[in-house]
Length: 237
Image (tube, rainbow, N blue to C red; front, side, top):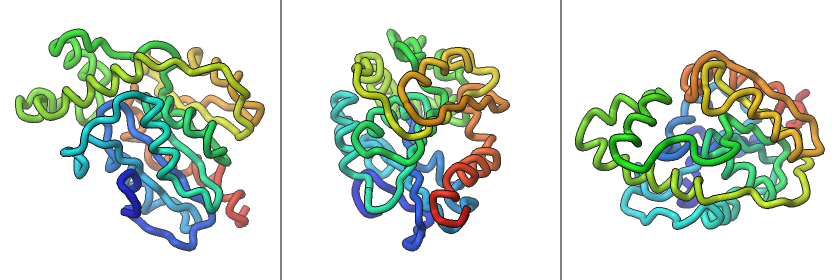
């Protein structure tokens, strides 16, 4: 760990390109850990850890999304080419970070195009919404102690996402790839078209098998995609 926000589970000091991954609401850095082993040697994986979870559990949650964006942007190294991957809430954070750090590629996974995708008005509705989206963490909410620890963070993240609106501004210049799960009704390929207006670079939409948390089962496909898009930037393509 080289600062509070970054986890380098597989350090590659000589890597020519870095890929920073930003989690969803309530998400954690370890969600992306396995990708670091299978990425080619010239791409280093950085996993972002927001405050208030895992090894940062005792830290206060960041009060709003612009503050989170500022802190993440300040934590990222920019001494060599940097790409960003953000899932769900992390996609919004990644886009706003991209406005500050000018990445070489932006991967938006299950991006939220409007209001927060879950109903967090009551505990019961929040649990039902999270479990409807699926993913490895959803079933854990049946355990009272895990629910007690996890729900406040999930609700907080959804609240700051819900309060955030992407401001008008100059489009990005980097290529943007939007990734969606084919059975995810909260973020569809049709929804993804709006992101084409936010870059002057190349734009593509990729649909992968699965639902909102498709990425948990799509590691091989995603690593192959990252490799195709980023290795040419490392001088090996």
